[in-house]
Amino acid sequence: MSEPDSATVGKRWPEVGMAGVLAAIALVVIVDSLRVGIGWADDGPRAGYFPFYIGLLLLAAAGSILFGEFRRRKQPDPAFAERAQLRMVVAVLLPMVVYVALIWGLGIYLASTLLIGYFMRRHGHYRWPLTAAVSVGVPLLLFAVFEKWFLVPLPKGPIERLFGL
Image (cartoon, rainbow, N blue to C red; front, side, top):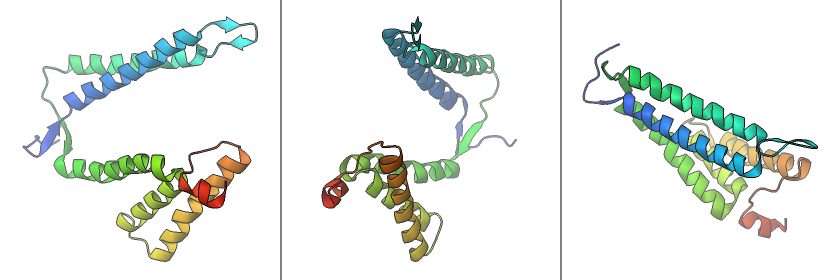
């Protein structure tokens, strides 16, 4: 492995940061599981039984990451990613953040159509006919599966009013 240069980011702090995020999520899961009950009722496990143990596993994973980084603290900090690699991550992350924000205003189906179309054109360089077919077809398929088959209502935004759904 080559020596990190000024165009790289060290690995240690992203690892510690993600371990902290993972531990925080684990603690929320554990505390909420305790709130709803982690024991057994007459008809089986209570609502918090399985989430509690998943939370414990997440907390153990976070602890393992932190312990590993603590053991390696005296060693050189290897490169986490080069700046070009981080730019590629941001090129995916920012559209996903916009997508999540658009779900609230446009609904999941229209936002998904836009996201799929964007990625197919921008990153896949597909032609418009295929992009249009896939970016409209996938949300229609998801609508059929979730709304009609599983009867799980998802946020539809203005499409619901337009089609009277």
